[in-house]
Length: 143
Image 1 (tube, rainbow, N blue to C red):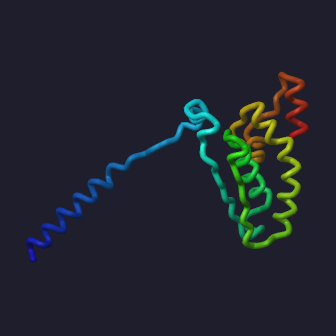
Image 2 (image 1 turned 135 degrees about the horizontal axis):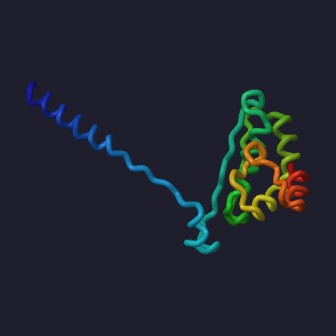
Image 3 (image 1 turned 90 degrees about the vertical axis):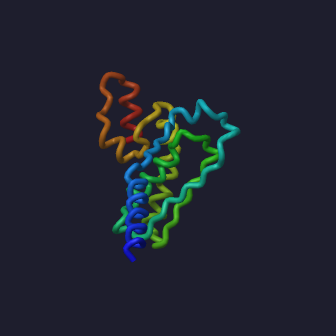
């Protein structure tokens, strides 16, 4: 019994030591475009799930969807799906309005290479540009 306990203790310490050395990986989104041609990139499906409009406000869901649509990825290879398990009319109409806003927001993001691409986060963290009148006017129109 003592030998078995020693064996399991040794095995435990070996497995713990392996777990103590985690490997952290990070992606370099800016290098993806330069490494691969547009034809070589795979198609990507992104699912945004929501259930309750009181816990997940439609503005947050719309902001998430618009942020995903503004990724620096070929638009014809990127599909965004919204799964609304609560069948909320409020979320539906918010997304309907967001589809019209996306026609303004997405070119604005691509032209200026904005970070963050979420409209809500961008307008909360970025001050209004005052040095360029054209940019300030366009910024106000989008806001």
